[in-house]
Amino acid sequence: MHFITKTDNRYNVLKFKNINYFLNKICLAITVTLAMSSCITPGRVNYLQDMTHGSQIEIENKFEATIAPYDELSIIVSTSGKQELAYPFNLGNGTSEKQGNYLVDVNGNIDFPILGQFHVEGLTRLQLQDTLTSRLSSGGYVDDPFVMVRFNNFKIFFLGGGQGRVLNIPNERCTFLEAIAMLGDLDLHIRRDNICVMREVDGKMVMRQLDPRSSKIFNDPFFMLQQNDFIIADTYNNGVVKNEMSYWLTVLSTLMSATSIILSLAILKRN
Image (cartoon, rainbow, N blue to C red; front, side):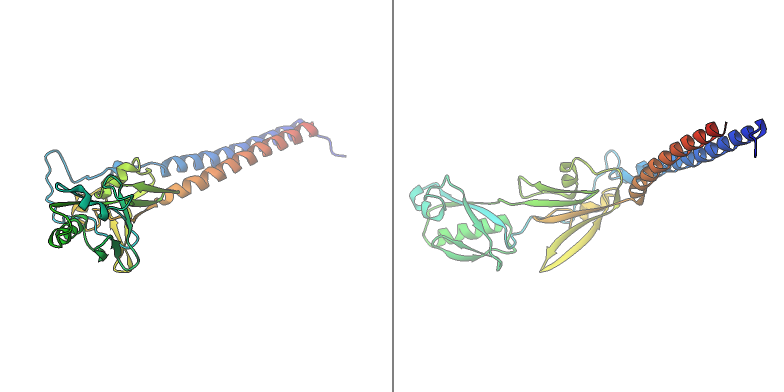
């Protein structure tokens, strides 16, 4: 029969303390690594870092949204002359107060009252206004016509940082930076150097990378957003690592607590 001596007890207590010390060191190392991985420097996230007070950037590319298939347009015709002449060209009970909504078909056409089918794909809002005004005037349909064309479904889509958003643009002009502002800024763990704008161009999906930390974005052809553009953002790996480490830190803390309880009960039982 083996008798428990004071030496055995001291050895068990010392062993218990060594195990606890080892587990505590592991937890501390993981915590420090987690804190360091979550550090975000200003160089990673600050916008337009190459611009200072008084900086001026010449905008080379002026962009206006063009009409594409499946766009929904509002077209209103009015005149300074006889209003009844304009009524037939306005959808909605024949009154100019009712907005006429036209859906551009897959071939880029709309069916306009009396004038018939119009190919509108590729035209800007102002170009379509001028075209309709010219046709109504030259055809003798309306004296001194005034045509207003608006987009009804100008939307931008955002994917990134574990979320998806749809931005409804109230007018036909939205820049890349304006879209970011409408999102309420980007999460700190989203990579500013790897934000992409994806757009359908001539039947193909085209993607370009834009970096809001540099003023070069002002002259990028995708800086002015088109309806139905996608903004796709990537995250730093440490955002994923942080979540994984938090999980394993919780698991390790639970195991350490359970080990401490088991060892304590074992020592008490032997005593």
